[in-house]
Length: 130
Image 1 (cartoon, helix red, strand yellow):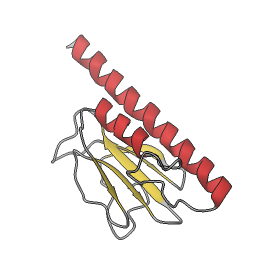
Image 2: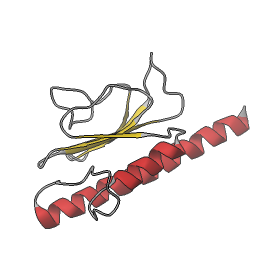
Image 3: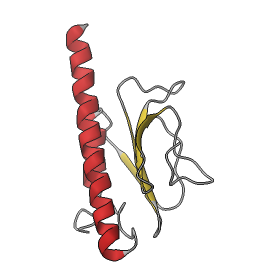
């Protein structure tokens, strides 16, 4: 049990490190350009894209896929997500132990939020961590 707990904590720490880096990168881009255009682009050659960091966070948690969408967020407990508009962005990645019944997500957004939540990014405002 102790080894299992240590592995889970290690996975969650990797998720947190990658998402915190993504958040910093997104905000540095905003301060230089006054918008978030391209932040969630799946194209790794777009310099402002944080998708590689979100994908790394997802892979650390055991998620092999990422959903990168424009203005809406599919409510799924087992997918890493990155969504953006020109004026806002948000991302969430499942942590260990996340289930359909009780999602356990790490969420970061353009308001500065960086937190664990049991909610999912959803409309009407998918750019704010629940």
